[in-house]
Image (tube, rainbow over all chains, first blue to last red; front, side, top):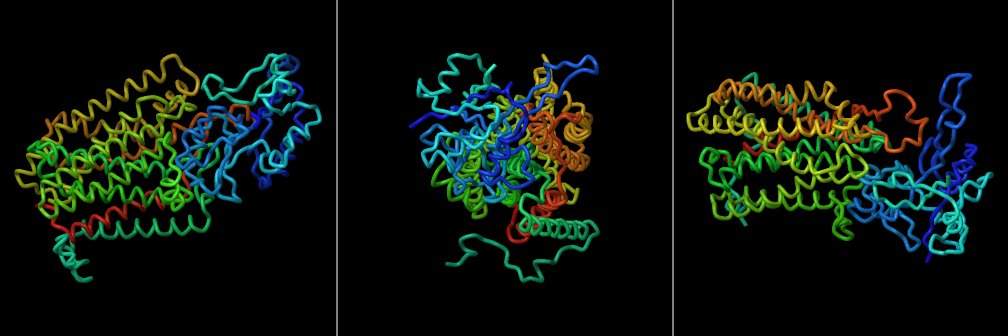
Length: 187
Length: 391
């Protein structure tokens, strides 16, 4: 079994939103569900022309952080949210009672109500569509034209993600909450 | 088995059930109860047709008015249970008269709370099944729900034995209901207090505050219940009890205000992001200043202090403003917890002022939430008809 994670070389992001499109196509996200499951954060350019701060403008792609200590899992009253064998935080729609406590508890706004199943859903690293078939890519990672996303097994020291996390400085979002995210932003 | 032997009750025909003294106030309350209940039914039909799309809740603000109203009702229930236990379980003389009416009130309010939450939880039947099959023992919602279920059982048994004049068993179940109710209610506080991602709610405050504000709510409801029961013409022994109740309420309100002041000061101090800014927004809002402070605490407190607790009739009216204030306390606690956007990276979503998550309850939510009060009134009317609640 692996322990999957993702590193994001976010400074290479050009906000083409190919990742959003690929994810939504792959996982059947309904039209109009903007910023659900995956999104690209946009820091607008600050300042007034001509004194614009070019450095302030960047794009920050994001999604579920696949926390090792996920608040959404802890608060679930029916254990509908669980860690699978690959360390991916997933939702069993048959057990979800739609109390939305997980949406309340998630520090990353990563959960949403799926109107097809009327349960809460989230990114699961394409576990249902790819990992289950032995593939080791995600839709967002496979489609990214500037190779922002590096997906792989954090427990395998030879994997690309393990190597890049050894070589480059990186940070996690809201790490002070102790959620131990498995999404890493490369600086 | 003969039901009336097991549980003594007054027999009624349909006609006698609807017979009441035709005073303007009675007729008004009758129409109000029916009207509110009808509203609730309409709201439920809209919800069944459209699901959560009929509500104003969003991904960023998943809990709305119905959660606030659920909290409102279960706080009322716990409050009535605690206040009635003062006489019934702890033998404080002044509260001896309070027993039966408070317990039936507690049963009615928690049942109404369960009805309200059934239309907020997306899959209530599934909840009952998986609550047992795959319990989430680290979840405050699991503990709160399970303990409240147990609590309801205990207070029903308490009422059953009270109604049979079996004071030994009613006391045992009363104590059990009190202990489990306190545990359930502080767990409800913990549902918010455990949210590590939301600094404005995270911490020990809510589990403690819930118990205190439940006692305040229970006191207000006792004034309303007894004001209605005696139509403001209180017999001397009831008057004496109500005066003591007012004095206890004065003390509770003073402690509540003390709690609120320190909560606000610690939240604002240092202006920690997602806490200090939210606290300032909270305490400068009309909901807080007019609803919570003026209606919920100051008006009743001033009346109690100025009259030394003797202005019983005035306190009945002040309890109405008090309950409106309590409603704002519940609404604000749910809403303010969700004010801070969780993911500032979604800049575009939150780029417009005021930068806080917005929420407006939809008409359907109002219909179910406020309509549920009509359901409570109707159940109380029925209980008053079927059972002797005075002895």
